[in-house]
Length: 175
Image 1: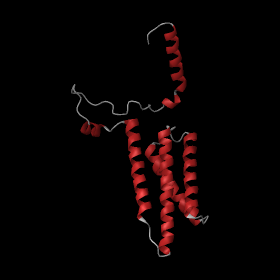
Image 2 (image 1 turned 90 degrees about the vertical axis):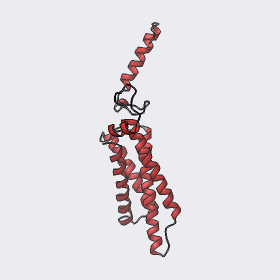
Image 3 (image 1 turned 180 degrees about the vertical axis):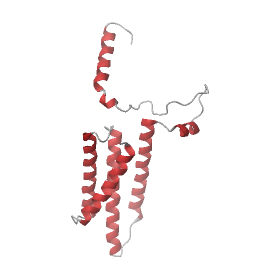
Image 4 (image 1 turned 30 degrees about the horizontal axis):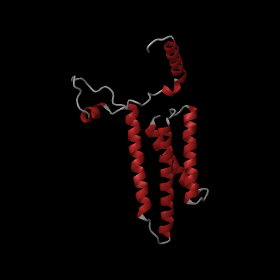
């Protein structure tokens, strides 16, 4: 399971849990949204702990929390608007603008994280990036500081390598 399915699936879970909390438990829109977001975050944490979703970096974990929170906020906003419309009121455009802006921010962050981890798709990389001077092909477009998948599972190997380098430096080797 990757980033997009877990963000989208969690957002759908927030919407479903929100509607269930409103209809079954008769919670107010903000309370239903809070309960739905808490359920989605707990489900995501459970999926990570169970090994169903990859162990995220802090950027991905924050992205999930922001997407789920934004979805809950939008659900509560629309729930309150529905109640106001029933009473003759209407939805103010400012909260809608906030939700739209934050939605664009979350979507852009998803794109940045995906490009950082996986790089650009081949055809898109060839169209957007200049051709290499040697006439070859663009090999890797991921961010140079990004960790590869599975690197979180290799801390012991990394530590052993650092210890070996320290021993070599202690012997006077240039490494």
